Image (tube, rainbow, N blue to C red; front, side, top):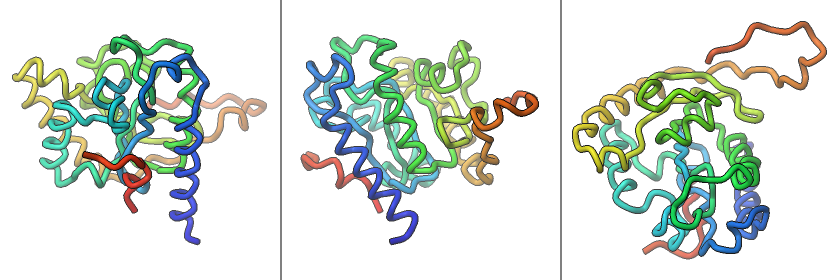
Length: 228
């Protein structure tokens, strides 16, 4: 079995574990776990905030109007949903679409980091304010950092992080549609660049001399959406 096939098989195992997850109270209110969907070998991975009502019902991310716009924007740079991987910071819908709670984020974080490790994306695009702040650990608002590549270590993987406005923002404010097209064009150019060097594990260098900081209708089975 090739290394890529082994990673895909491991991702299926993570999905099966996540589908039965009870690590936080959202397990009691969800309809379905929204693990993520797309190409398990994608160079580009999107991270949104949390599933909405339709995503909760269908078990798939970004299936509403915002998902439709995301598909259009991907088409502008020669990609589609099947060639990327789309996930969220949470896999279960918070009641009333409220913001994710710290306990919920802590429960989902190991799953998110494992997806990043196994998919090995070159670029991780954060959609919107919440996902961007969480992934970058930077309180700066999305309007200040959108379209500007960064480099971050997420778990065991170092990636380019590219903050983008959430598609829902352009649906609410149509003039932002052109801004998003510009950012997706820049995202396409970033994908043509080599991946960033893999940064060392902080735990492995803790005893060494400190280094300078680095700035940096769907089917029921979601497994069908792990494109190969």
